[in-house]
Image (cartoon, rainbow, N blue to C red):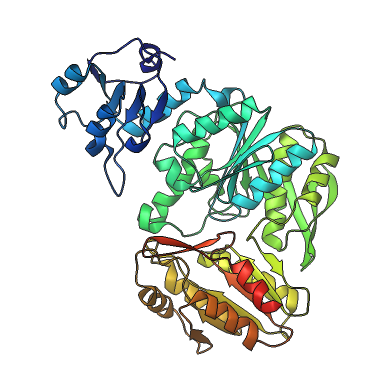
Amino acid sequence: MELTELINHVKVIQVAGNVQRKDVSSIEYDSRKVKKNSVFVAIKGYKTDGHLFVMDAINKGAVAVVVEEDSNIPDEIFIHADIAKVVVHNSRIALAELSKGFYKDPTSKLKLIGITGTNGKTTTAFIIKNIFETAGIKTGLIGTIANYIGAEKIDSKLTTPESNDLNNFFLQMINSGCKNAVMEVSSHSLVLNRVYGLNFAGSVFTNITSDHLDFHQTFENYLQAKKILFDILSSESVAIINSDDKASMRIVSDSKAKKITYGKSENSDYVISSVKYDLNGTRFILTTGGKSYNLSTRLIGEFNAYNSAAAFALADQFGIPKEKIIEGIESTPFVPGRFEVIGSGRKKAIVDYSHTADSLEKAILALRDIIGNERQLVTVFGCGGDRDKTKRPVMGKVATELSDLVIITSDNPRTENPMQIINDIKQGVAKNNFIVIENRYEAIKYAIEKSKDDAAILIAGKGHETYQEINGIRNHFSDQETAKEFLN
């Protein structure tokens, strides 16, 4: 696409320099990736400012630079370099607009489903993808664990990538024959306009509890961020919401979409009842339109009945035959690091991504419900560094109140002192049923070797992650691998 045509996709304040009639090679927000005839979009980040790297982009052959700060680099530099300087109000929105144009508005050719909420996004996305593919519809997925173009797996670094990466992914999905796409939509991505301009055919709200307050500052800001996804839905789309979450009606209060509810409430469009689960899976009844359906999934816990019900409701609203929906839910494999059971003997380890107070509480309660009060329940967990500090003492309180033994350890301390994080966790502890083992490998080893023969060990916080980040350096580490080593 020629630069002259591409700029027409953006709301500009001013254009200076020379807008050349050249085909644009790429849209970049990282100056290190700029090549000849790229358009570089200078974004103000939280760690650095893209406006500081405009000269790097010019020297690497950019054909145009998009800025929201007009005073940093004089127009004369752009005129001398014979390239365009495009001034906009918001560089992130401009990045989304340019990407949408450059990649030919791919979400207008896909049925795109967005899933948001504090917990359950990943699992619900995997279930929906499996239902669609059970029905013969090739489907892409963008999420925390990985991105998928059909069956092809692509490593993921962000729950929701930047807008140019997203539009690129969606075009690749279309070119590979995908008709549908499912994506996790984080609160960060909504505030930072990463999904700006995308055409969502449907969205799912799972639940909301306190999280990411390091970024959003208040719970109200966090809720308003989640709400954005439903505010941008058109009247032709559908919003699937958890009626048992008291925030649901606020989330969709300004949405034009058709609103469909699921939950235990009898007023729900899809009513969940008779939930039973063990370490082999979950069974429940879902009633809609006067008919009841017996559903089963190998995913464990009441929260997975909710995730499955959300997926059922979405797929049903999209016209997928109910027998295919039921088959898709039943055949969804274990989602990596989501209440993943490890061990063939009586002693079991359960690896779970629960990293909020609410998700940790639900995981422990689900495990207690399965094993009863006679068997020992051991919880190993820590909290991530450089993230929301307010949840640390709350998680300490939850873990020690509900477990027989708690081992407080490191998660991903990142740039923080691991012992400071552990001390923050200890502030909420009210019972003397815990020990501290900072080294996560040693903590898991202790939990497995020192627990009773029929114990259940919940290893929480990292889930699917295969690394531990300490002082900004990622080293290989897997809760699953470590648990298997000592269980065997």
